[in-house]
Length: 440
Image (cartoon, rainbow, N blue to C red):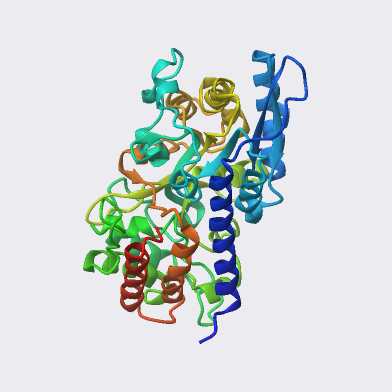
């Protein structure tokens, strides 16, 4: 069977990334540029090109750093869009125009870590008198380690908790979620909140809304005592009964229990759209949602937070971002100063002001929960930090394009096109084949 257009695009993109990474390794990825101000070290920092990010760095973070460090100038470089972020970065590196530092997420960090082009920062951190490893949550810094070395510092993060519409709970006489609520409680609550208000045979209000994205569904596997991989990531465990049962329960909220809209019923709207419109009572989301729900618009209803429901154990996922130094930099000490600024107390204070989830710097995150800069945050805001103790980052293999392609069968199962058990077994077989072949 000929590959689909999507498969072809992914295949070409993956080949490009691998090829570009090979080129940069062969070239030594030395930066051929020169500092353009005599007596001043110029560092290039590569980041995402959203207007929000550019304003934060160009108007606040960079001017503040340069004021405190007059001998260092930061030159901002940005992607042409999120989709082209890695392609542009690899082109810059292969063309010997590498930045000194760049921003990473949990998705693309493993790719760069595996290529041995990132500078370990363990020694910088050990001899730094102002910053210590304990200043960050270990669950996040562990995500930035590769083969035992810390290859960057986290800048911001969030766990995933449950957001719920208090007005809908009151309208239908449903009690808010308890701190120790279970999967059974979650289903019963969702059923009590699902209503066909116009009597056309289809719900107009759903109790919840699931998401098949990779930063959501793994928590339901973990809550059922399953796992995605063995601890050393040498084998996929998604064909094990615990994993299959966990993800099947989650998918069935839409496919069998009908307390969540299916992909077809959502008509292209995401779970945040459904929540803001009052069409779903509960969604699992991160603190990044505050930017939309508190800053960009005021929701026309009262809402609050609850912990994720407990299965056989409690679990949730992490979302995080951080920054890395490339080994090719001609200015490692200056790069460390900027990296430390981005993740330390100064950068964390600016990140708090911008409302950018939670700072990875522990004291700032705890201060934000105790005394939030935005007085309109829900009173149960502390649940995001409470979830740190049981949160995990979904594992991302270095060659994520191939891994993401393998997940297509799971997405088909979320759509109801095939049984989830069959999809999990096929997914595990494909992933294990890639592992055995040394692809990742």
